[in-house]
Length: 103
Image (tube, rainbow, N blue to C red; front, side, top):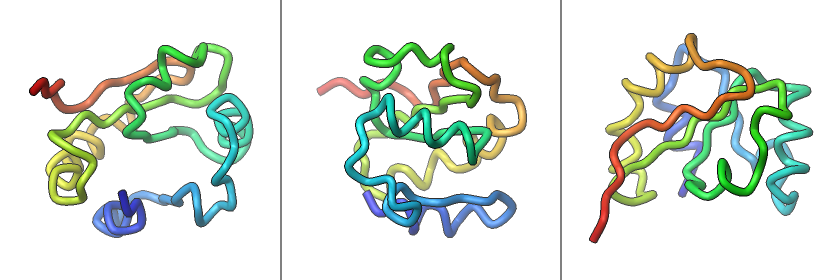
């Protein structure tokens, strides 16, 4: 996924991609630990992250986007839901957006 394309649609919110922040290559635990120092909310398409990490240990909210695929065209449809969820997302809690698509 090209996070910068999706982020460019979110004009009222400060966004940064993992690559831009030079955080690529970190494990999820290390990534969340570093992200909590700089961000209030961590947005991901990794549906496994909440099952692999105890999100309550981190002082940031986690939002998981569930679209038909990780293609920009499918993720773009979730931007209105994401913008509505950002101000109310709770630290240490996972918020799921979109619907689970099963083949």
